[in-house]
Length: 265
Image (cartoon, rainbow, N blue to C red; front, side, top):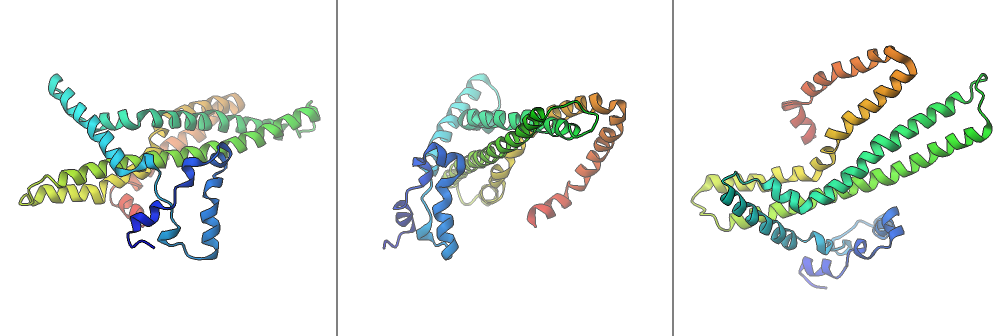
């Protein structure tokens, strides 16, 4: 066995790259390593190499090229250089597609499921003039919407995390290259870069999944307000008002030191 861990890992190609559509949809490609982990503790030799598309050298080269283009464009236009523009050009379309899928799940599937549950429950009222066939339709909608919700949400979260990880790897690689060109007598700059590499870039891993909700949450709120008003009228203002009242309090509790404690727990 080779003494180089990288050579050991390269002998085990990541099954995600060659997985079938069914395997991708069901996450069956990860089952073999789960099965192996049931019998013993996983070791380095058991792990797969990262997919080629997620390699640090490839991602760093792509981001470096886009960053150089951004610097040249800002120089020509006299504008400020923005790293997020280069990141958006590299990962923006993937992030957009995943956000649309997440929005479809939250604004359409979840709402349809709620309406179907409401109609199904009301169908059991003795005064309701609803046939058994309609009840079956409502129940089927509840089941199918729940199934597709689980399919969409798990894949969206997985793909969002994957995109965030790729962004982190690309930025970390560029920061590492930057440290190699610095004069180490300037300890402040080196320390700042090391802090970025060890702390700040890890926010990419978890931050992207929440960004779409800046748009999804207001849309979902408006949809639910409409259906609540249609169902109970102005009485819904009490519940909606209470939710909006506690939002600033919740934000205050999760700000500053409290948020840092929760994140470090």
